[in-house]
Length: 121
Image (cartoon, rainbow, N blue to C red):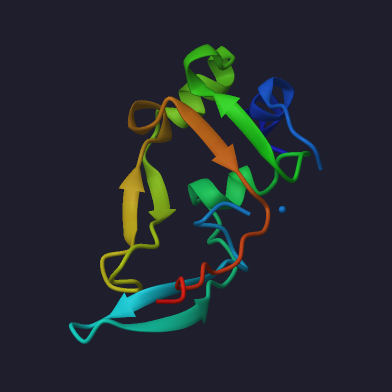
């Protein structure tokens, strides 16, 4: 485990499921301009990505208040790395180099998530 993952682990709290950007995530998204929802599963997180390192933390689910993170974790969190963003046009416009520290106050990592469904009309 790298020192950043260890520092995050030491500051994280959580029980023992995957972030909306982590591998194995199943989601629904509108595809193209037709508004049709499509279901897809995201593959494994790429080595060197934010998701890859966050998946290596000891806890499966955790919350990290980045404002109070240890210095080693803050240094890692301040560096831009490839990050998968699942939005309404996935997979287009879905990969960005993002530093997590200035982007978010709190990081919530869920090891496993599933697609949301539409509410009945």
